[in-house]
Image (cartoon, rainbow, N blue to C red; front, top):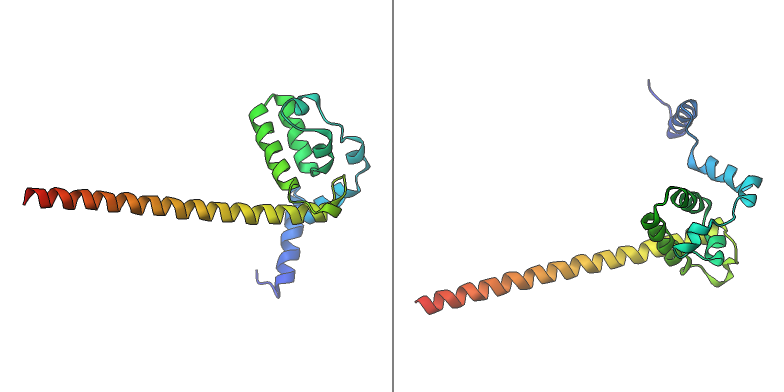
Length: 153
């Protein structure tokens, strides 16, 4: 089957995904943002507070994180909940001052982009440090081998 353009391929993929019960993320996000049930269901579980989440952070985090934290609270996965809360707290630290006290998609997405960029820099620095340590260890082994060869000669 040949497609005339990328748009027709994208349209076909969208229809095919919908026919299998999948909803593209752009449509899913839009429908979640309009959902009145989402506003009602934002109450924080007590188990979430026990692992380090406070009400201010709870109001800032996106619906997907809230869903995950509720699931972790129900299943008793405190390690996952603690890690998710730590990540949400780190991302929230990148929010601009005008972001407001409640979740908003655009400021949150900007904070996530900043956090990811910072994490990429940290990872690159860690890789560079590991390479430097490996090089230093190799130089030390070579110097030791050279010293042993000189002593034997």
